[in-house]
Image (cartoon, rainbow, N blue to C red; front, side, top):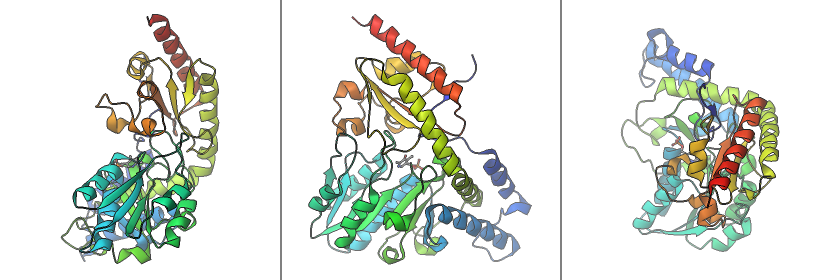
Length: 385
Ligand SMILES: *Cc1c(COP(=O)(O)O)cnc(C)c1O
C-alpha cells in the first residue's frame, strides 16, 4: 500500500511547489539573501521581496500593507494581540477580557497568562452548534473590558462565527476585537473592514505556505496601544523586533496570492467533496456531525461515532491520515475541550474524527475514506461486548 491519503489539512498544508521554489531562490546570493534592514544592494533587494509579500498578504484580507506585522505564526499573532493589546491598553491598571471556551490553546493560554497578572477573563460557552451569540458577548462586556477575542473558524469543527455581528457589539462600546483567523484566511473570503476586526491573525502553513511565519493585522486606531512582545532592533515599526526571515515571508506572500486566486473554485470544490463525505457517513447508526451544519469552512468535517473509540478507529484506518480531535491535543488522552464546550459528553467527544480536505483531495479519496470508515465502524461495533 502507498502513502495514506492526507485528510488533515486543518493541521497543516503541504507547501505549494511554486512557493517552495521561490523560497529556495530567496536563500541564494542573487535572490534576496540580504538583511532587509541593510542599506546596500542586497539589503534593498531583500526589502523589496518583503514588501511585495506584505502587499500580497494584505490583499488577501483587504487591509493596507502597512497594517500587517510579520510574526512566527498564528500562535505568536494571538499572543501579540492578546498580551500586547491588553497590557498596552491597560497601562498600570488591570481590566477584563472576553473570549470563548472553544478557542485555540494559544488564545486560551495567553488569556491564562493575563489572569495570572491580575486581569479577569470571561470564557463564553458556544451553543450546541458551536456558535457564539453576539448578545452573549454584549452581556459579558463590562465597564473595564479591554479586549474581546473570538476566532473566525474553529480548528476542530470548522464552524464559522458571525464576526461582523460581534464586532458591531464591541464597537458600540469601543472595545477592541481580536480575531484568530488561522483557519479561515485563504479558505473563505476574509475582509478585515467587512468583519470589523481590530486585530486579526493568520499563518502561512494553513494556506500552503511554510511553517514558522504568520502575520497580525493591526488597525491604524489600535497600533498606538499595542505593546510589543519582542524588543530589539525596532523592526516592523517597533512592534516585532528581529531580523525578518525573507524566504519565509516571500513564500507566505506568494501562498497568499495563490490562495486568493484559487479561493472561489477551491471553495466550491471542497464544499462539494465535504458534502459527499458527509452523505457517505451520515446514515451510519450513531453518527453525529459536530458543529453547525452549514456555517463552516468548506471541507472541514468533525464527526462523532457513538460507542466507537476514536483512537481505535484511527488505528484501523491505515489508508487515511486523519485526526481525532485537534492535533495540538493529540498527545493527551483528554477528550477534546472544543467538543465538550459544544455539550458533547466525554465519550462522544472521544469518538470523533476530524476530516479536513484540501487541494490534493479528489473524489476517489472521499470514496475510499467513506468505505474505510464504514468498514472500521462496523468492525469495532461487531467486536464490542
Ligand atoms: C494552527 C492554528 C493556530 C496556531 O498557528 P501556528 O502558526 O501553528 O502557530 C492558531 N489558531 C488556530 C485556529 C489554528 O488553527
